[in-house]
Image (tube, rainbow, N blue to C red; front, side, top):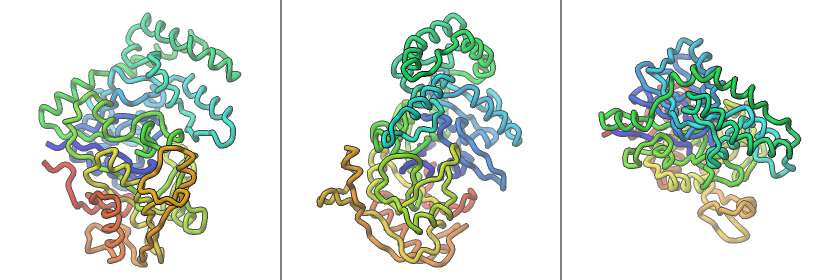
Length: 431
């Protein structure tokens, strides 16, 4: 059986929720492998809307095992609130359908407080645009070997020792930022109170995942955000705090890289970004406004308005390479309906030199001017199309040109938020 990794190939918000749900119906296990509740997936199933942040998209499908891997950082209170919200929509979530890796790092209240204090203290132009939910500081603690993990909740003495170690680092930081010290005893009691509710879902995810693989079960690895926000290969420092690219799927759940059979990159038919950072094809004109309005470009998690621009084939070709993408799912093609002319970025002009990739240095990224290729648009509607025959000729030409420029084929084509409005070209789960 094929195992599939789904990654965003731009700056996130590419429509991964719908595609993951479309694939999860055919998967046995759906695993989140990185990120935190700063990401958001919106699923529309039979007219009912589900907004997920920490939970894997598979939880809304019965008979599946949903997994939160060790590559995720988890806010326990947020998770329990999300579980209750989804349960109120009629979805059953039990320890038989949801498993959390025992070595998953926890996001604690002081992580969010530090996140927000740093952002407030940053000067204009140096703000990262973080959601302020503590994801970055939690990953810092993981690397610094002072994070509290799910397994630590099972023993009070261990928990107290872990908290003391963390506070040795955090209290001096807070003092420098003018933030009150952490109430150690109150924090420990809060954690002990929530511990039984979290621990009932905890287990050796690495063991279970390898058992499922050997049993021939189909595994769907679900990523959050997008590859251009990867801590190593994104537009640093305006990135997230984890590795987003497909290689993280193996590390994030404890399974070998040879278990990955197909990498599906989710790509929007234009480009959007939330927060600060370089964006070569950004439009600050009527076309950009039109893309935002037609695409309903507001973040699932933050509600922030997304910046919009033309499709950047240079960046997508780059992310397809770093993630080893086998095929893309092109989403929101219908948002381009009605444009007389469409533009695709095919290179950058950097101080008179043509570049076929985005340079690493931030100051060079800021000086990159997009080189565009123009294509005729189409007046017909593509919304709801379920076959190539339903698409206008110019829409097909646009899709084919995208394939050529990013050097990667289209595996799926999405033409609306509804899961069935999807054109299947290549089945990622094919053996």
